Image 1 (spheres, one colour):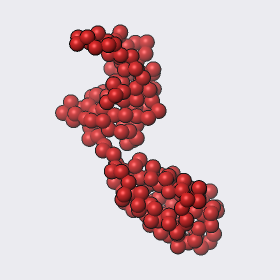
Image 2 (cartoon, helix red, strand yellow; image 1 turned 30 degrees about the horizontal axis):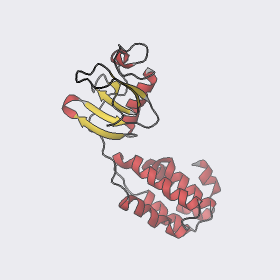
Image 3 (spheres, rainbow, N blue to C red; image 1 turned 120 degrees about the vertical axis):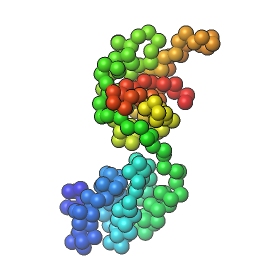
Length: 212
């Protein structure tokens, strides 16, 4: 944020005081600040900045923040590649949000902030019983829980009555193990980015079928 403030002219500082930039960061994260910085660096008119700020400051549902940041990044990329003019930036933001895909559904189950180390042992490499799905470390299990609690995931489904959600988390990989199927199906040992989180008060993370 400091870099943006330092690069503003006096007129631009009137349109973009620190309080406004802080509000933009709250609503659209660093994606919104990056968009402003690109417009400033490209010499966009104050009227353009004013329109873009208006869009970035709009109230968005908390659950939609990841979705909104992604679409702000799309507009920024178009500006950087000259595929979009400054005058089109505000309208492009509205179009991305209003005409893009529907915001992703969020889980309704709440979990405490820390994985249960005791429960997680059954699904960690080196301590998981034979035939159990596992992650490489407790830290990776915690990363999955953190992703859920911060909204950075794709919901597969949930069972609130059982305090269970199934989610997809990019960038974290577990091993899905399914052996000795009573129906004679082949044994499976597959990498997966799909996970089940169970138990609100003492959560554990279990890698699940990547084909869900």
